[in-house]
Amino acid sequence: MKKNNNSTEANKQKIKYIDVQLIATLGFIVALFISFTLAYDKKLSLENKNGIFNEKEAQNLALFQTTLVFIIAAIFLYVNYEQYKIAKETNDDEQKDLLLQIETSILAIISALIGLYIVFKNYRKKTLEIAETEIT
View 1: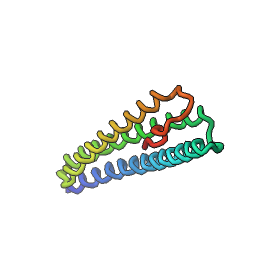
View 2: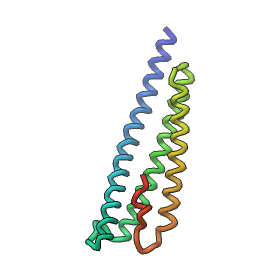
View 3: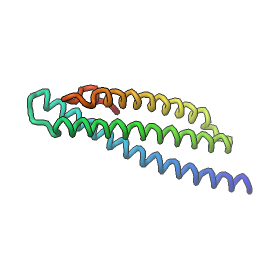
View 4: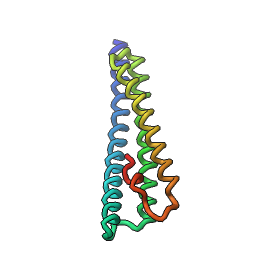
């Protein structure tokens, strides 16, 4: 009976972390939409057409988007680590897969940090660089 109770508690924790993943995934969808919008705006400016944003707005949006991507990557790392701890406690078979997910999350954080570096490096320039529109 005790094992069943532990299993129920573990499932409750798993559900909690899946809920966090769902929210983070929505944030990632927002980041993708912003990235799409920034890329389209850059395309319009390269075609000498009126863009959606002025340069300052585009830079601020790029900064917001890259910060959002970093936060999402950190959330996924946290969730994967917590799920790994649960799997380890319950001797779940998915421990190895969750370790791989943790490694993937670490790579995503590195990628997000590089994106933030690019945006910060170019933040005061007059125009938004193409590299800043592709960060997701």
